Length: 85
Image 1: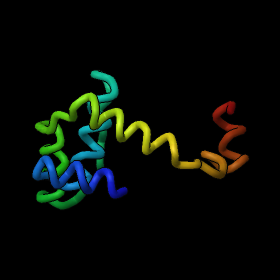
Image 2: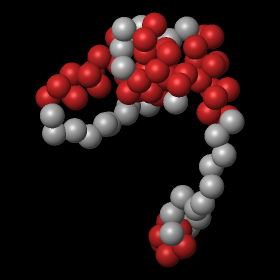
Image 3: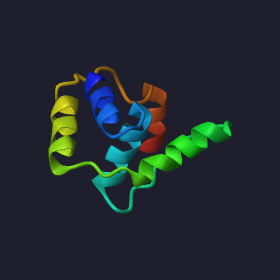
Image 4: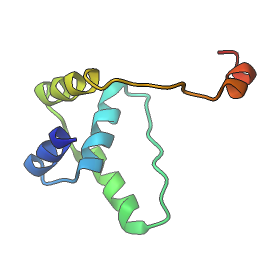
């Protein structure tokens, strides 16, 4: 997403950190758990907690997300039956 790249450049970060910072800004009880086996990636992920997105940046990301058309089922039919969807 070009918007995340632009925000990352402005904040001296990487797009992954902006995505995690956006997620952290949604609710105080949301805790992203990105999986990695590499220490440098873990350090990058932790760095997202130091990034503060402005209300305008959050709004821009939200607007961009609304334009993405989500297609397909979340789960295969058999799994949906198991979880009651």
